[in-house]
Image 1 (cartoon, rainbow, N blue to C red):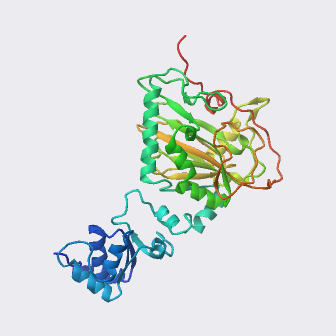
Image 2: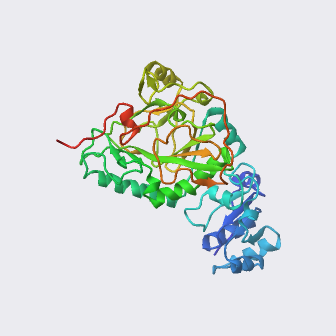
Length: 418
């Protein structure tokens, strides 16, 4: 038998404080129907959402869409008092600061497990990022946001990585279907072996993997980028940087704009966390606000090193902070933000799927260091008719000819035995 909760007198004050909460429940199956009825009977305003018009009609008529003792009476009473109604309209159910402090509280009771808060916002035509988050990005030059892809998308991305790592065990040197400029797709560090793989870079995985292409084109990550530099956004290139356990890969400090200069700097590097990242496994570190400072040279005399000078790196490290988060989070980073990362010293891998997006009117001033079959694809909005120029002085990079930029920074790739 189902009955509304009866809190003890000691908890009554807490119950009173929580009265009149607006709640949207997605899915009117067994859990959703029972939750809707009980919460409404406690005095909350409940909107039940379902794709089935028949279920919605039954609830609005005061009848239960499921069979359970006493549920019909609870639903009938809740509908009669106006505390419970049902709808097929997602937008109507979640209008008003979804998942924020004073908007409706949302419970996805019988919704698909991959449904995220951000996806609900997008379905309702609402912004994914808050104004505070947007301001933080432009102030600091970066922003970490959780749930940037769905659970299903993340699982597919991680499955591809696991397969590629296994493939790498059979290779002693960079391998795989070549990129469109003829370089190996997969790169390993010099410490790589079959027993302890050190796969560290997959170039433009969106060219060979439907899962990575979909995440690049249509995920909450893509939507966040569009809210920062849109409405018209195009794709530039992508890659995966891996730090497997025991690998020695590190990233010396640099600014991405020095590798990919454009006519303006409305460019976002989206670094999607493929693993949980903490203080142990080589987290990305950034210098807040450095996107507003000078561009640092990546040359040592006439030699392109792909990294800032040693004394500059020391100064930047002193100001840097780490970016931690769970798998599925994303660090949205301004193209001029100084950043780097240390080697993985922990017992779990650290993978980043790195997608570079530009405003549609940002035109490259140098050849793409990682040409892609999807380069220039409009992922949001429409193509630009005019280029937008920002007055600046740009040091043109020298593009890598090897499997990855790690060799440019002095970290050799694995080599087959002679």
